[in-house]
Image: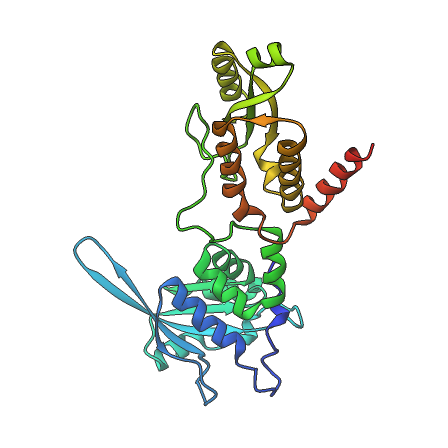
Length: 306
């Protein structure tokens, strides 16, 4: 589990926050698209916490299922929700004129309760695993998770970073051969500096003329051969994946600046593309580092001083 449901105050203690799990349930169901008919309250509720409507649209018509929602927050004790916790379900549905029963639980439904629920025409159970899965699915869910699970969600954000919204458009570094965006998590690629072989032979000096971005493997090989035929050779490459590590990024930037001053001349074309690399990877490093990235930095630093 990523979200710690124990962050939500216990429901059976009069701290003034005992309704928090019911409020989470209301916001969660609204986020899923249910229409809230009756909000949580502290009155005599006849064994219901909320009432929500689900509008189901067909090709030629639509109909509504009215759900009686029962919230059970047992995360602090860790016990499952039993049949003795959900008594007289059919009578409760009739009392509140509802069509279906929905259990929203911070633990799990027991086998005995599941057996009883299967006798209902309409029933749903959202346990802790399902709730977490829906909340971590997109940014709207993240807002709810951040509000009700601030500590555990902060840890999740650190270990699952997303690019900062710094620019109006999404940052891209596309493979010069196939066009794939190499900043996507599913893609892996390199940027390769190219130097002029004639200048190197005549002046014994490396002058970078250009750069290309390429998927690892076939695209990289094809582009290398293409530029070699035009007199430009591979003058060094770096992994774009590694450049999205905050510490590696600043190390490479400093190395780039030092190389301009101390070692190499750089043609305008290559210089502009190098700037593009740092600009477009910046949103990926403007964040905390994951534990995996911290370990990678330790490894790189060990090699630096060997």
